[in-house]
Amino acid sequence: MGLRIATFNHLLNQHPEVRAELAQHAGRRIAIHLPPVELAGVVTSDGWLAACEGEPEARLRLKHGVALAQLTGREPDLADIVLEGDAELAAEVGRIVRRLQWDATEDLSRVVGDVAANRVQGFVRGLFGIKGEIGGRLLENWVEHLREEAPLLAKKQDVATFVAAVDELREDADRFDKRLTLLQQRLDGER
Image (cartoon, rainbow, N blue to C red; front, top):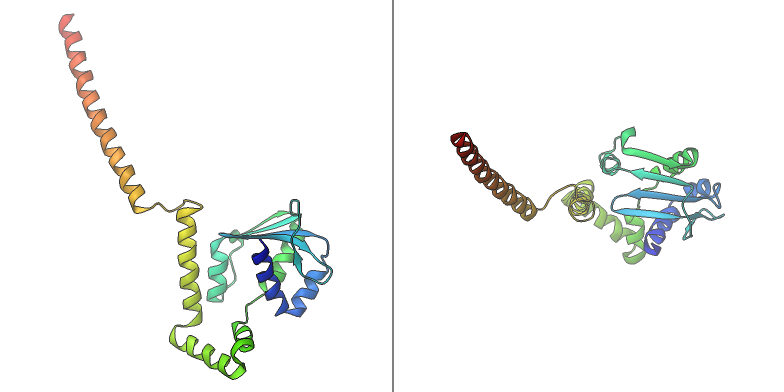
């Protein structure tokens, strides 16, 4: 959880105005859940998120459509956002979090300098299209999550095993039906 909170705080550091708004909720416990990532903590008086014990007062559950909407620049559907607990606090946190965007160029400029960072950013956008690259990675991670942690998608081998078991059951049922028919005929013949 520490790495997730540190990452969230890093994003907050890039947006001081957002952090100031979050500081207005100091002492409140919040959670943000976007599978496969869950982030929970308490808001500090400086607008940071810190680890804490206990249940969050407000939980913001985001479905995968929210991230895809963010990548494509459209508004997420209301059905993709679930507010739990203190709905007012959850809605406010959602509004605040929505304004957070990672400035990768700023982070890279600390390592290689401003000019090189801008060139790398231009190169990556021109070569791959940054939204496509991020979207592709997110899609791969979510598909893995849906297969491994929240099994909504089945693995090919699991489907094959299931189909084989169904076929075997059908054949067993056919043999049972034939035996039953033979027994019924014998009973009818004895009468």
